[in-house]
Image 1 (cartoon, rainbow, N blue to C red):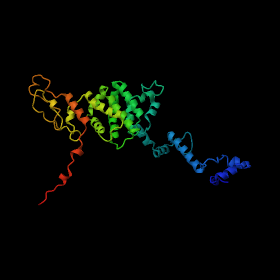
Image 2 (image 1 turned 120 degrees about the horizontal axis):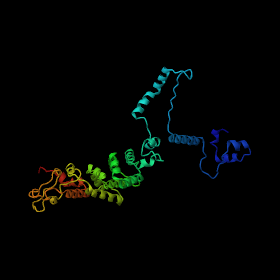
Image 3 (image 1 turned 60 degrees about the vertical axis):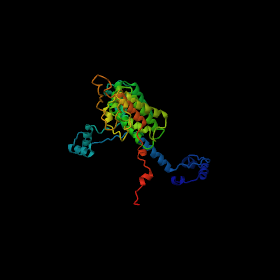
Image 4 (image 1 turned 135 degrees about the vertical axis):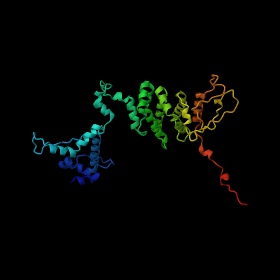
Length: 372
């Protein structure tokens, strides 16, 4: 009875063989008892090969490859003989010279940041006396968070990690926030937010939670001066994109995310706003300002109608009202707070519906003048 034929036997034959009085058959060939009530097919040699192959792959994935190159100093196995020509030949065909040049340039070492710290933690004063070899220190540092945001796309981000980042942005010192922004943390948050807003469909269990935590991170930046400066540097982003999301079909389903978006838009009043930024926006494509009521911008004592504000209006130049600026009055300059009010108002109203503006009646569109 060979192994090839043993796997093809039915359960009834195996059960019959197991009750044999021959010790060789029951002790050597058929050692495992078969359950007659089980409908599962007994394992064959193919299943054993699959199990062993999977175990080998798992062991290889957990291990770290180590390449050892052996150089023979001579061909006669003598301990004191050194053949220079043979050694140089081995160095060339093994690629050791190129490998040394690449390692000197710093491009050959491929490892995770945590493993590098575990090996070289004695070189840093911040991790020298840390028994955990700097892992706890690294996971709370701005550089680690920026590396995490840059090396993972929005699908790979975890809401729990973003929650820890949000707590750090709220509770750490302004210097910590400044380091986070200096390493590129704000730009990384903008990139991850852009990826979330550009996808066609968001998964509620993961993507919406990641979106909520990223919005809370932006809100945490409003609490400190370095964060407000970074938000002011990229205006009107991401406020215009968030407003478009709020009025689109892909808006978040939960009320808490929409509430955070409104709070972020209202956070414009806390920024060091530059009026020059408004004139650089293509308002025709994003938000229509042709219908803005600008009577509040003019002199209250002047009864003349105020001009409409358009995309060509240069708001970087302060508006002067005759007779008030020269006399030292405060109505001569354009009030920045009113600009912010109008800006937030148009953000909350949302962009115009281009489909409704381009609608034309069918009879008017298809009418043609006839000869008679």
